Amino acid sequence: MKALKNILAIGILGIALVASAQTTTRKIEKVNIDKLIGDDGKSLHIKISGTKGDKPINFERVYNIKGMSKPQVEAIKKHVLDSLGVNN
Image (cartoon, rainbow, N blue to C red; front, top):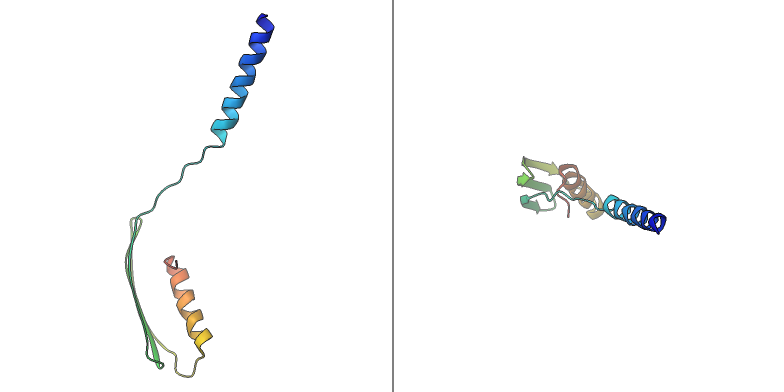
């Protein structure tokens, strides 16, 4: 009987260890971003400001897009937003 109790106790302990090993924690990052993206066909103006976590983000640039196709302009936008980590 005592051996059965020991086996049961070890089994319960094993289950508890497996269950606790599967628990994950996730850090929630506070994001406050303002995006201003303007395109007049000749220039692309991108201004991003705010904070992501505890890091400030201040980016402003004008790109010459005269003669570029729509997919090329979209690729520039995506690249900038991805590089700043604010593409959602």
